[in-house]
Length: 573
Ligand code: HC1
Ligand code: SF4
Image 1 (cartoon, helix red, strand yellow):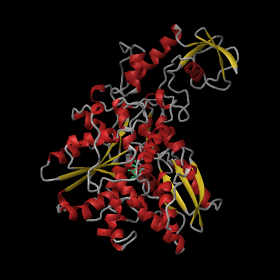
Image 2 (image 1 turned 90 degrees about the vertical axis):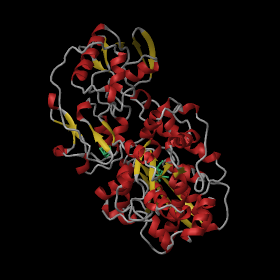
Image 3 (image 1 turned 90 degrees about the horizontal axis):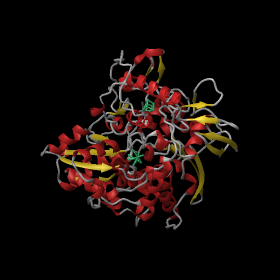
Image 4 (image 1 turned 120 degrees about the horizontal axis):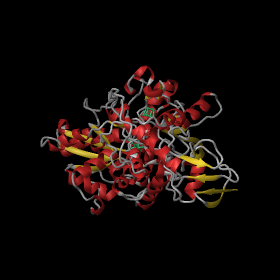
């Protein structure tokens, strides 16, 4: 440890940490803008300046390591004035249409202006006026709101290893953009939305599709059904001020009922269906010498990454559609028949923690009936906005259950929302099907947790199945490179585009750096997922009565011809 003083307070702190961190430990708040722990620690924005006795200039505390004897001042007149000037300069060239900004009240720039008590902007001058990029089905980029913090650049380049956005030009002309000023639509962007999650302001946001949902709901001709992804229920509450990791499944269903959906279904049910199909596919490929490893195909950001960067692995992808696409396809076939509803009148809305799902739903490969399997995808954030627009007092809603006839899901379906969950759900089912008996020990700790790459070897009957799980595209790249180099070999691989899996998807509620830097959103939300799993009476996909009935009455058995027609696809790029 080293001895330092901050604002006259004597402290003993661990060597190697930054001044910012040391101050935080002493409950002294230093304002930041570009800083995001472990993702963007570059000292670029100069908001976190502090005075250090004896140093010639003010220093950026987010990158300055503590040392023995440092005497630090976080609120001296020089510091206060420097921060104000910096912030006023940023504000002078910011599109300040806060009233109509999607990030109003959840904007780190707005909060800073309040915290620093900015009453006037002394440098009103020229402002940049760059075109909006809204050509992507998933992501909108508004360069006039960008504060050049570079968090999105670090996320896209260092964590996701996609590198489609970067800082260009210098000085007043500085901007974050794609090469040759292309749209995100024209570059190999995976639409994962991780850049949105780290944007402190409204410069990056999802394509808002809420009006499409409102107009479908207003159309008396349509039978509008909604399904919600596993990860939405453990994060939606954050939009209503509830603690991170609060489960709001019942309130979410109640809100959707109130908004006027004819039926509220659970994507988890289709996750169970995916396990039946994917488990069968895995066993078939192992037995018949098919392409191994089987790689999961539920994360559309991962599929797009694979198409652009690893086309040699496309044949490895499971042919299963992702669960929400399977559900859409089931709703427009089996359910339409069962309920006697004209398929053209069924309108399927998916609420997803994911921005890439907007792109996925538009893919021509995903259509069982000639119509899109899913009509509109909205993110968790968009759902929150719709609930607010509806005037619903969310926190006081009474819990409701998902609707029949397809409301039942299992714990296996729920855990899809956390990294390793698809793998665990598959192992629960495949191991019992092969053994022909039921096991009590169904939790696979080795594939849980937020490590980038996890491995396990699991005994399935007399086979040893080698499994790997990667979350975040940088980890996926590492894993695929090791398979390509012959350094590793597996039978079954789960890949999710977002670090932590869907719980940390690009469509989830956004937490500011002041929270996100010090709380692991992935772990907190995943904890809630595993709690929901443990609370459910049925925790294995093959024991789901709804799924059994679907096979009895419609598909025959997993992997049948009919199942292939409706539930599978092929990505060829
Ligand atoms: Fe996911 Fe999935 S788990 S991909 O992360 O397989 O988005 O939550 O809905 O489809 O079930 C997302 C989550 C989601 C699908 C399922
Ligand atoms: Fe990069 Fe993902 Fe953002 Fe696309 S959506 S720019 S891949 S971080």
